Amino acid sequence: MEIEIATIGGYEEVGRQMTAVRAGDDVVVFDMGLNLSQVLIHDNVETEKMHSLDLIDMGAIPDDRVMSDLEGDVKAIVPTHGHLDHIGAISKLAHRYDAPVVASPFTIELVKQQVEGENKFNVNNDLVKMSAGETMSIGDSGQVELEFVHVTHSIIDAINPVLHTPEGAIVYGLDKRMDHSPVIEDPIDMQRFREIGREGNGVLAYIEDCTNAGRKGRTPSESVARKHLEDTIRSIEDYDGGIVATTFSSHVSRVSSIVEFAKDIGRQPVLLGRSMEKYSGTAERLGFVDFPDDVGMYGHRKSVDRTFKRIMKEGKENFLPIVTGHQGEPRAMLTRMGRGETPYEIEDGDKVIFSARVIPEPTNEGQRYQSERLLKMQGARIYDEIHVSGHLREEGHYQMLDALQPQHVIPAHQNLKGFSPYVDLCESQGYALGRDLHVTRNGNMIQLVE
Image: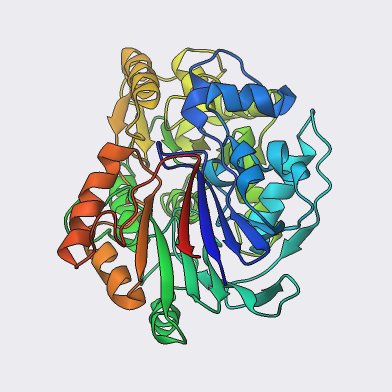
């Protein structure tokens, strides 16, 4: 069976992920993401109102026109998890393909909300839920099957999809860390990866996220971040002024920890900001997390400002707002607070907890710097880096290669500079550039089996 891989997006940058795998006449697309930094450098861009071609020209979504060079029909569009760099372009591109979007329950719900907010295109693709551990037949040959393997990442319900073909398995390895003690989920299913590596013809190709490949050791568990967070919050338990926390809205495990520790020190947690309400509200509705009944979630600007007025009236010492804005995004809640655009008054000595790292990208770094300066000018004390990454470091990569023993390896989710540590790592394990280690670019084709 012919096996061909189109590397469409995410092979020159972190963001706008999209890869297509053709097995015979059947094509499966993995991820359709947005490159958020390409959007943020433009003022007041509303992507939901824009045409896909304009967004492609901006470098904001994958240029999927290379798909016309791929023989066969798309049978499924499979996002790995709910981050925008993996699902953010589905509302712009999915309607071009007569294929369902197949994803885990939490991811499907986020895709559904993304599609409902789309103003330019009618996206009527079926949305199909499939949980980790389940499989689905692809095409009519009966020879190709899609499987979801549970992985741990900085968002719940993440999976690595595996396409089983007569020539071996294609494992799409974006994004994960090896977490054996996560906060609200099962550990990563390493046993299944080891089985896939030794079944049938083994693993034909492994496509891997290289984000932290240059960092030594292993990525710590989410339980480590939870402990750090608990230590930080308990250390300011006796402070009688304002305490504000911010983290990735999509990081439901982290949000749930902040909510718990706020309650432990006698403060009322309140979730503020549109995306905070979206992710945590969706997770609670689907039963992934059970917040206390009195935890408020407010996304609309007016209801957020009403909540801030209530906090100021009843006393900042009684509340712990959990807000959007950890990267200094211009319209996010914390940035507005720093600019003095909300009824919440930051005073000398108030604590601001950043339970997130700056995404190492110039736009984010500049915005985060500006946000912190504004907060400090009002007297805020900053606690930062209370975080663990969602991506594998060096040891995790060695473990995955050992588990899967792939015939071919394709680095992804980075630019050329970001690929180089992973290339060195693979070469140390016997792979050779140009033979079975394929460094590629957006818009290229890799023929694995002719």
